[in-house]
Length: 350
Image 1 (cartoon, helix red, strand yellow):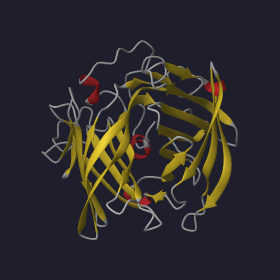
Image 2: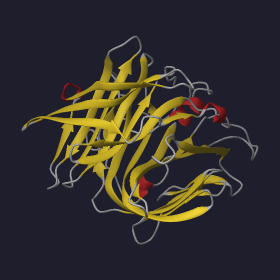
Image 3: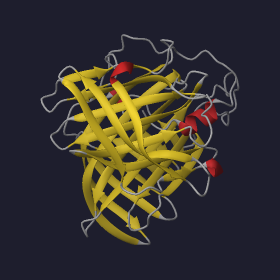
């Protein structure tokens, strides 16, 4: 489940419109579902991962592209009408720096500058790209004032449909859902540029793909989400959507074992419990940056403590019209991945 943050901000500007409803029964098809689904309100291509530097240090990174259909241009013949809007976000978590570096971009689709192709992954935004190429690999190029990433992702496992065959429920009403699949255990290689100095890095990453028209219930405040690549080849995704005023509104996830057998996690199977909190001096938000994730499987309960590579991985994207959230690289017993915490500074609005 990916940040959606820019999508929420943009979609919230538009009056209600007849978007397709997410329903059970989807049949995922590739490479078509790597590509855009422009009739739906929003979708994203979201990659998080760990890289190892030439000096042996671990570095986290995140790249997300969003497509939003605001319906603002419906019936408007102008070429400048915002029929689709593309947002993108990139971040680097380097322990030598001790705080997250991030960059954002946004533009209406068209004019050869921004767009998201159907049929296969090919998303572009003013020089930033995320693509699926002919040999089966994915590539991205993103960069800002403080860093740039040129990375290639090679799948080592097949796509993992989330929820009920790709239909992932997000709330008490069945239409509060997304179509959702992941590709865990990407093998990553490429170049990271910092302060003008390129550095070759390799590592492992996780791709999330979601598209939806009605993602959050009105009484949802935000979510905790994690995607974990485990050392034995297993993959774990879990999320918990928090209720405004406290408590959990909905939870879910999946656990794919090294042999490929997968268990769908229902709301009663997922619990996030804070271990340690960190308060941002910049925004005042207080985040549970270390958590104990407990999942219930047919063979018994398993615990995954989530501990950040460092605590200051908050993203303040308000200057780009996006919310404040925490998204960072975390370690766990027998693996590592990313933890995303939204709605702690202010409740998210759809």
